Image (cartoon, rainbow, N blue to C red):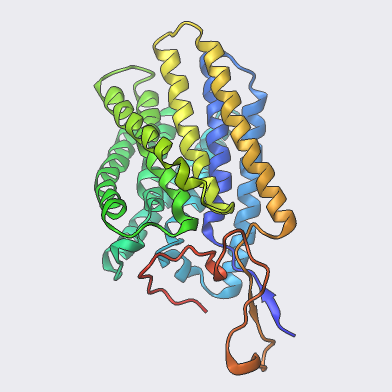
Length: 358
């Protein structure tokens, strides 16, 4: 008999990352319009629990397979490994509102790990024989996402110089990687179907940067805020045009790419309503929160349903017992397939990928 083994991939951290985004929306709403605090607190707890469970399962899977390093350098999944340290950074900033010293310590340690991992991954991308067709918007996560999230957290925790430093770090990385990413999307073959939701990540940089700038400037509307909002508006309209494409993607972990990106849009919208002192801002804020929370609830229900039916994760690779070879000497594949999955990677491999997997 063959033993099925399931390789979990780092894109699973998108779930806890997205929940952090929703929790932040409710936290900002509490500080701007005085909405109840319990939704934010509950969501932060849920995000932390989800991250912990995912981290234990993912690391156990990677260590057992002996592929920790190969996961980091993988052209498809490598960028998502940064969420392992970015999510605790967000959690640390949230914990600081209840216990400042503990939260600050978690935040600063996670920030250091985020910068270190971002630099290491960037070095790997420089020296690796990567083809442009292998790039996808997930490459924004380690340095752009990590830097701009660190900027907002640093400002919130009372470290203005560190906040501006990390804002520059994330902003310049966005300019550099953004030009590469748009060239890839404009000139190369389409992304594999399972990676199409990562195009939603294109929305995030201007809004994550806008949120960080609001925190750094204490809610002031200036030329930087307006410029970021202008580019963000373009990215939102692009998403509207992508709806027919997204409808072709089977449900799977990749769908959580929408979560944090759209949460970033909402959190900046809430800050703008407060900064402009818009009439009816309280009602509009609750409408935004309701729509976003409903979207998250839909994602969560579909995720649980697909997990229950065994169609959420990619196919499990089956291995023969030690000392025995499979029939024909080849490698067998389990028939438990994930939604739209092809092989152990769920159809995520871009054309031209040269990475080998056992």
